[in-house]
Length: 118
Length: 148
Length: 337
Image (cartoon, helix red, strand yellow):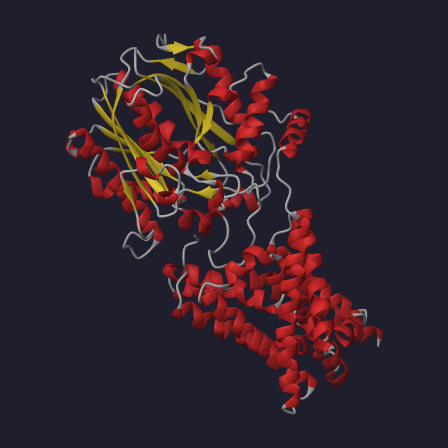
């Protein structure tokens, strides 16, 4: 059951992005920036938690989930540490993903070369 | 040459008439299916890590790391751009697409050196994502702190 | 008094130069296209054995020149000027090729209109008595253009249907003060025209107004009619640009459809997934020096209006939200005087 929910939630989020790309000519970079910002705002409003409860990985895997993690990390850190948490919470919560992206990104760029398109 | 707004508008109408429209329905369906499938792969790893006794938060972090690895690897072996060609947003929006946006410029620009080429260009798209994500979260944190 | 000038933008050559040879080299994808039999050399690997695609592009430029020289049975030392350019920043493909070629060199930037820009200036130099042999050449490469103007190759993005595929290749033409043709008899130099199009994925729409402007001006300046020509060929309008151009001209009373072809449409087959068609400076260069010259030599066409078209954008101007100016230079190629 959770696979069906994740499929539908993840699919829906991507389908909305596709409509934005095709209808507004938003570039992929702008879509990613929009989604991460939106995800953080939705978490701030307390909405995104519900989407994760419903969709599981379908809500955390799209980049909205990255924004959500940043905002959630900040909120939790504020509760625990007060004002300093505003600055430490976001990156602490997402450190795993970001570090992995930097490290694997660099390693794979060392190993592989761009191939021309056919 | 002075800009002639009326002429530009007239021309825009002509040009639009001949602009082939994107195959919206097909694109949306493909984005939905691929985005859904990538989410299911994430769900699979989430269930796996949870079954190994990790907390929800740790499991989610491990899923992110795993998916980033997969996205970066598929980009390296030259598969991710082929997926992106038909999946569109379906492979851009998931965190694997975030990894793709880091590895692809890094691979492409390493000929310009490993500092200002690969390492600097890695963040062409990831940089803005982190800037806007972190900044938004800090504003939310400030609001939360003062309203709490 | 400019005695060779006709009308507002056209020159009529008194001693029209002959096109004595053309050299072409293309990448693997172009080598699978419908015009494959007309190219001198088809690369199996688009890195051409070099470490970077920029180096490969420059090497293609150089080899297109050498192929043309060989066909004309000339040595580079006999060439008075090389007129060349390409799409990369500071036209490095052309300039780096000229470094090897050891020949007086004018670097040109006309985006994808560079081929006819070079031929126009070359013909003027010859007619003016400043040169006996001229080489006009240009190149482009899919992989160098993508990374400069668009996205990294491995990035998973969709190309819109209006987008065009940059041709990997290089073409060079040798003009001579004496010869038996085909001759360049007229040249109409285009104005930069911009009707406010901003979509860098729709170059055809950005260039069509400039193309229409140059064609109409050419007919007005020379007094030629559509019937005077066997073929009217543009550089890289693509399918989208073609349809717009035909409508713009039709509205002004010029119905050229039966005589019209576009290099960008001819060079690839629709099954090659290039969307609107080919583009790039090499697109017109390889079609002219490969397919078209051989058609003219075989008597299929006797008088051709050939016009390369360019979109004068840069990554910076696009990012700053500037619209895309277009330009088009036309030359008349005729087997008789």
